[in-house]
Length: 150
Image (cartoon, rainbow, N blue to C red; front, top):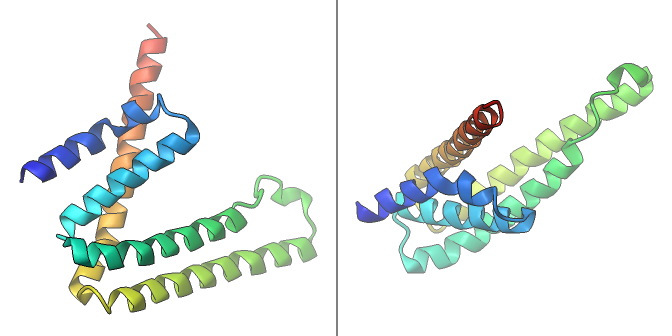
């Protein structure tokens, strides 16, 4: 229980620490918090964690590469012709399909080391972690905006 309280405290204060870090440091700190949070919530033993994290890290890296492809300039959609729009649409569908396949492979690989129930829990934890980061980021922005308007 003490570990969980500590992890939640660190998660809740992350944006304050992140704001002082460089870009790379920020992502390393978030990754460390994610590792601690998932390890705690999934009750990963050292032996299982040794197998779990390389699989999960490969998944995250592949997903990150996909998201680089997905972030296409959609602001200028009015300036492209129908042929270019079709190419863009095909690329977006391709990225979505690849993301599905990456997630499917993650689940298949993880089934060898953790239960299906824990895989579902992981899926939920990913969403929860992301929502907490967004909530803290927004909260921090609101505090900064209120401080700058004073």
